[in-house]
Structure formats: structure tokens, C-alpha cells
Length: 140
Image 1 (tube, rainbow, N blue to C red):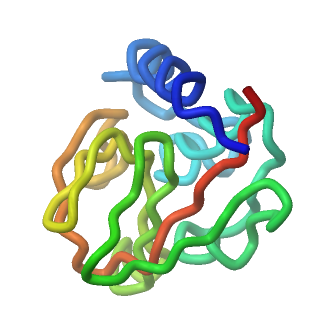
Image 2 (image 1 turned 90 degrees about the vertical axis):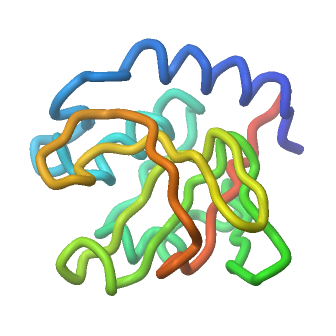
């Protein structure tokens, strides 16, 4: 079961530690990429690495460690969820970031590399191109 309090506290610390930083990542290949920031978030949660491009994260995540939630007009991600855009984003590789707040119309995402080459920062998005999100299973 996911502990909202624990994830919220970790997310606040994560944002404080990485906001404005360039080239966040945990492998040489993902540093500075949107997935690099996600993998450091996953490391923070002590969950297994999710391999692949951003658009592949929903399919490649360990189902025992992450719930998959498809994007619909009536739902929205919670703080700490990993939002995934499809191949219409990121030159076909997709895009991803960590939800900070959201409702059915807009969400605030902590992400990097949008615009290309940018460091980690908060950005508001609509749901255009969003496939869904991963809900990390974090024990309290």
C-alpha cells in the first residue's frame, strides 16, 4: 500500500535536492534525459529501475511495484505518480515527469529536458499526449 504522507515528504525533499540541477540521472545514458530524473525518483523510493524510453515506461514497469493508470477525461495523477507521454512527444521517445499536483484539467510536473536541454524544474501541462501514469507502491 502506498503511503501518501511518506511519498509527499520524499517528493518535497526530492524537488528541493534536484530543482535547477542539470543532467540528473543514474546511468551515463539517461543523465539529462527526462527518464534520468524519473530513475533518480525511483531510486529515492527504493524501487527497481524501469528501463526504456519515456513512452515505454508504462509497459516496462514491474507490475508488482507500480500500478498502471490509463489517462481518461475524469481521472488525474496524484503527487509522486510518474506521468508518461506517448511518442507524439520527445521526437518519438515520449516524455515523463513526477506529478506534484493535478486535477482533471491541468497538472504540475517536476521534470527535465522540456524544453530540450533544460534542468529539473516544475512545469504545468495539460493531458495532451499523456498515455497514463505509474503509481509507485511504497510501504509506509
